[in-house]
Length: 249
Image 1 (cartoon, one colour):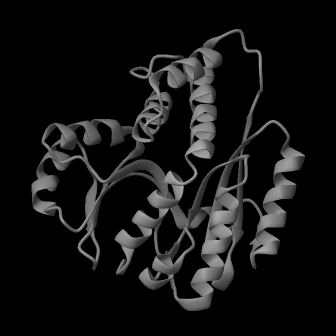
Image 2: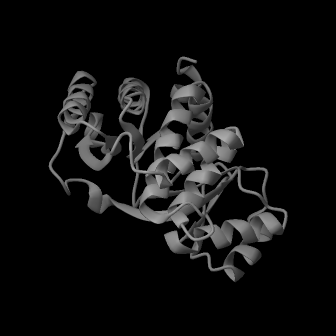
Image 3: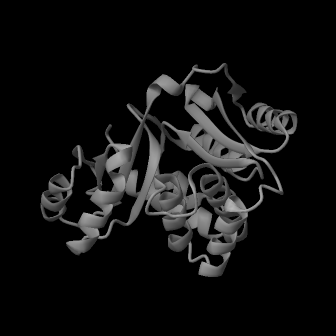
């Protein structure tokens, strides 16, 4: 992966999410509730809840909101029962896209996702059509102002799998999903908190787009992320820095 604009892509995504804080809170609360319902309310014994809890803290969600979501998940089972569904499809120039949803109405969700793909130059594919292009990994991302050698030692000691460098000077520490929490804790304890961190679907290879193709793909990804039932959108696109700089606020 060339990754010449890797850091620009990370920063754009973070800034876009910051501008949609209310919607991000709703998605995180839904994830916390489902995680607590499935695995219990103790984040120390429930890795999925731990991850959602950390996302909530990173988004500056009030602790009371987090605790209410946990209690809702571990309570009497009343309220919405969400079904988890993954949709796969293609964007402009064959960009691979996966869309993870939580929904209480599958027919509504698939209709909205299909419409969004079609309206923005993409198309919804069959199950498994692009999933093989992604691996589930813990990813700790560091900006160009960090020293990879400083981070590497504590990361490897804690069980990290690899460190991947990009042309813009940023780098990722990769972990198995089950090792993500301990690796993240270890590098933070060593004084090297990542600029971004998550357990995510990481593409094996990327498609670099520029100009109108990049703008079209960005529009599709933003539209998918804006859907109420969508939790996460993954793609193998790498957008050029100029397109990201010109993207609407």
